[in-house]
Length: 103
Image (cartoon, rainbow, N blue to C red; front, side, top):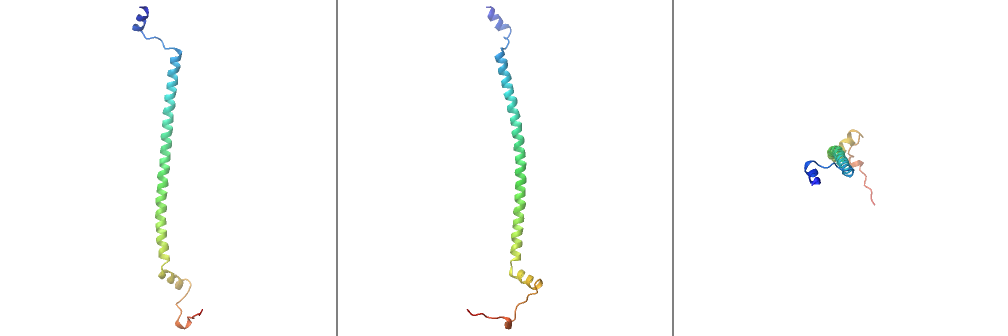
């Protein structure tokens, strides 16, 4: 009967093992919370790096397209002929200047 009165009136004091268990769980919760914060921070940094890399990829693709177009322009027959005439002083040979070589 005395024991029943103790249980009904007030809670029993926690033992040392129970207190240690609560401390361990509390430390585990805090450690997990810190790990979550750190991983979220790392994920944000990686996402920013990804966005920068994608932007650089897009810029490089634009430059590549422009260079291909420019290369196509320079490779046309009229452009080559114009450069030959203006910068190298070349001209189309006359019929008399053309020599045929037999094999």
